[in-house]
Image 1 (cartoon, rainbow, N blue to C red):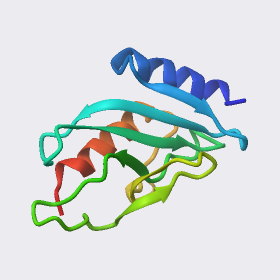
Image 2 (tube, rainbow, N blue to C red):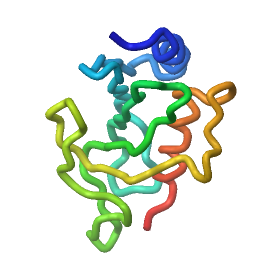
Image 3 (tube, helix red, strand yellow):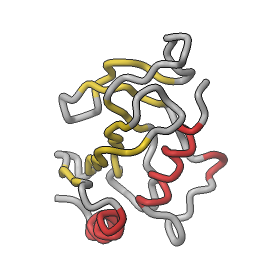
Image 4 (cartoon, rainbow, N blue to C red):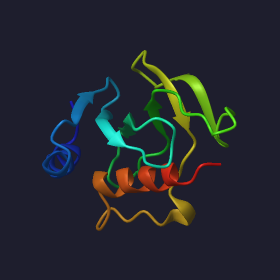
Length: 129
């Protein structure tokens, strides 16, 4: 069972991304899936983004995200701080993992939410390195 805070924040996320889904995980966390996200900076036009709202969210911020399909740079190399076919914890889903974190403890549970985290994921995906 996920926390009421995750559920409330997911409702707000779903208003903006109606195809988003939430899958409870055994440890109280939740896997958030947002399909068909536009990726104008990549060779593929869109991807599914997944991330985990951890147990302890919203005090604990999300950390890392996964995309499908695998993303490559124009020279066919893998982007920095990412890895292909990395299993999402507790899901059995293998996807392209991006090591991405909130910088310097700037996550504020009173201000930030799942939309904030997704915006940070999009920010990372705007930079092709």
